[in-house]
Image 1 (cartoon, rainbow, N blue to C red):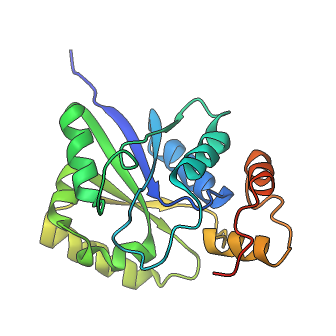
Image 2 (cartoon, rainbow, N blue to C red; image 1 turned 135 degrees about the vertical axis):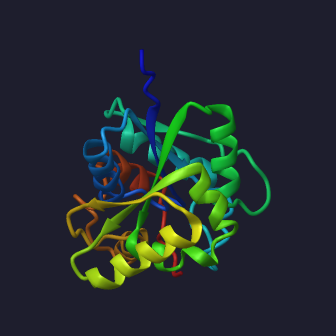
Length: 207
């Protein structure tokens, strides 16, 4: 009898804060690729962002937990939060793949990140451990993306698939800016996250 591997998506990021764009992206991946689960892995010390983290690790974990609590196939992982120093994606994937060798992992990323992929640490190992799901946006040049995918597939023997998502232009930075400016973030983040941000007075100071 043929044995089928478990299929699990991975959503990484600082989630400072988590917003509905993250959730829609994860749910789209879950549905389109018949995933059993999507892991949300907030990073502790990201290597690719030369910016500060504006809320504590505990606060970011709590916001993610609040955002995904009513979705049975979303799960929070504290793996990267528990490690010290700069956290690299390939190392995280290596750890979870070694822990679960029979699971197929699908790393969810934006198309803009794919164009920077070769600047990531050990891109060949990343593609060894998972399939890349690349979320397309309406303003992305399709041919350029197709060319990049073909190039990376040939260079790294990688598995890359397109993830079709709505074009929702929301970022964590824009949410922080709205809070700082006194603008509403209603519907930009889950209600529980909005309440948490207000209660804890997050993002009120100038960046």
